[in-house]
Image (tube, rainbow, N blue to C red):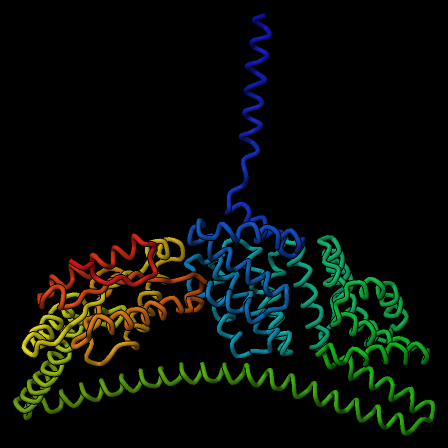
Length: 577
């Protein structure tokens, strides 16, 4: 019996432990898992992000930016580069996490390169180059360097590409980074007509890509290798390499790679005097011209077709293909030249700015030396005049400074620095002055008090920058909806007041309703988040309270809190006595 009790206790402990072991992973763990799967398992990646969408409000600030970064990657996968760039820019501009900002910068380099926004890409390249040494994770650091190398490869700055790739090859052990770096290194060597040290390094690069299941990347390197074989007169090896892998390439459905293989096959078959297959692959290359922007393979295809037509004495066709070849070569030259001009222009503007600053610094130094020399030379015969000039100058400068300081202090004392409208003290002073004027002419005055609904939740969920955005927008839309003689002020954290001189209660209700509507229409997407905004309004009038501001405020405040209790986002008039 005692043994049975021990058995039951042990079974209970094991059962409890198994339940505890099945606790769901944290949001951070799921974000990290999604990050790992984003290029290997797109469907699972999207599924994890979809699950986290509903938990966004409960994430920490860092986790929210991590989530927005991954959402940018998801949008890029779906082809919505503008939305992806918007996410990336928001994270880059706001996150304080150095690693996340670095990763976002390299994503922006890729996006700007894909969108042909070469000048914009330089800003993020500069950030990567400046901060790469601060990234302790070599894998992430190398991803940034490879993104920069690909950017320069796109504009055919192959010597610059080599410089960045060498940094990766000197220390990288990661299969994918090694695969990318060696592929770029080999391609740049080919384009610069440098001597290839060993084909075995190229084959190792292909094996590294295959090991990490980077099928597209491994076949990109095979295309470079085939190009190398053709350039060195070994068309048999080139043809064998291309034929062995063309079906795999076609299955990837990656058009840029497919058109490169077709163009190389056309060249290889032509070298082997197999004009039938050469022409077939050249025509397949040209068929992809509408969907692929890579002009170089298309130009090669037209050149092959020109040569075949010429050998077959089809002069009309040969001339037509030759013209198309020249047009494609011209277009390729203009495109590359345009890319390089955009980059060089941006570099020149940056250099000119630096040079101008340097020139101004030197001029300041020269002026300073001249002034010192002049002061030393005239010290004995003009010291009195110099002293007077200095005194007058200081007096003028001090007077100007005092006036500016007074204006600034007056503004700071009277206006809210965030919203630009009256602060509580200035609103009170202005409102009492208006009430004293109105009581003499026996004209009505109305007061509107309103408070932003669930404002603390906005700050907690989306951060204080989003809260500040709402405060500014609410003040702005209300300020645009009132008269010049009306007085608006921020009288609390999220509480505002509007005094309407000469305004009856019915008119005040219309103004309040219009302000309430405009607040609900605020577009919060510019804050980086989408959420609803509303406010509760209370109205009081001098007909019911008299002309004392404190009485008006008390009645309007009571009406506003009645609006809160009735469900918020509504206008309530002061309760009748």
